[in-house]
Image (cartoon, rainbow, N blue to C red):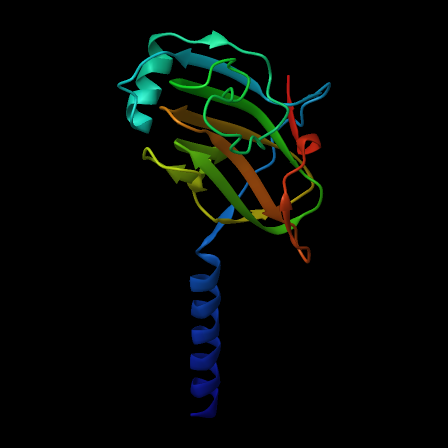
Length: 192
């Protein structure tokens, strides 16, 4: 009877661990690891459409046409007020951006991430969604996932972003294993 009781407790413990880890997104490093990575992120823009009020519309416009823009330094573009340029688009409103490249995690472990956006954005790391905000909104959190990084190195990154009018922001933070919350530095982003 005691053996059965111990087995039941062990099974409940394993179930609890599964439930706790179910909220952690497991990432896969880029394979092969890219060589000759430049700092920043590639970006393509579609501009000038007042009808873009959702990620679906933003993705549709990018499929119709987009033009390469000046690479981003990273993912830290705070709200600088009405009239400030959106990212590197050179204009202050009606911007849709397709952002691609890599994010470099310096060590293995579980990271807390958070993304902020005005207006909407959706982000994927290793092809897995890590953030989504599908609305016209002031600068707001697009998600606070935990991600499991199996090894230090580069991981594929894709972001779709749109800004309708008013002000704009696109920012990112992480909490490294055992660390505190901080902006993800520009040096953590790269592209080829």
